[in-house]
Length: 384
Image 1 (cartoon, rainbow, N blue to C red):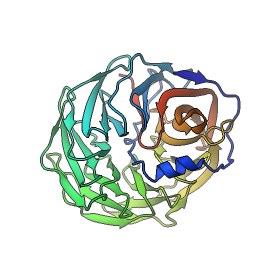
Image 2: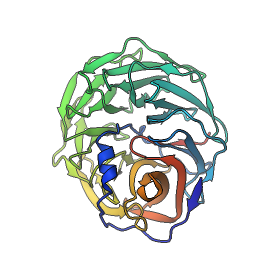
Image 3: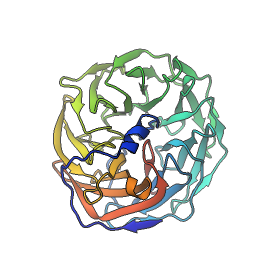
């Protein structure tokens, strides 16, 4: 594990990514980031965890909105071909789901960020995403290389996962190459189904099970990473191949209506989004362009473009793919892949201006020793 410091600032320069990454994007499945944490002062810092789709091992760092991140001792090894990871909302556990051995693996998060593995739960197909309800008890695993299913999971007090009733089918083979999110009130599950180009709406029952799909809305090509605003009024989903983000207004019953002006252009191959805790700004890393797309979120759900900011202007071809917002909303963390170093991941920090414009922190450029950031490969967990 090594770390480099950079000495160049951000820019809006767009660069075409190496062809191997474009080819990889057609085959690697997406994951999803959890709902943004409530705003809080950055007094105790947080843990950042990163894994690579094409490597085993989770790299951990103790970090804050200022200063250099420090590595967490040890490295959990859940397996390779690992698309999703997600923490419980209370920050007690990190869950990882490798595709090579379909299972859900819980890790208890220690005071210093160390990870201790618990008993895994077998999955009926390759896991594509892990989604937690706000109550810390109910979770949903989307699987679907062969069978499109939402698998309801109950999380025990010690972090042990168990099946919570029958899985809910929602489509044909490959329909479940999907990623999702839960509304802040815990009443709806939203799943972006890649090949059918649809965003699906499920009601979440009191026992943690889900209803059959109650609404399907059309999106662009390859919808991934839906995100509900913290106030629950709007839902945004990335259109990976279309290079855009679709916006929807959310009704009281959870149903969706597309926002005027949607979809909104991003860069090439947009990926894991982040939103500030106050819901004012949305950020979209692009794994096919050299910048992070930024938007102001208007009260009516319309997205107003802000200036693009380069992820790694001194490293052509190194583009951001996953992102996470700090609890304060003052810092955005982004994880990218450096083709010059064989696909090794690089972690960078951006400050969020009062106007929502990002500024690259030149002092932070950490190589993680994990490889290929395509997918939900980074989590931020506030320290307890």
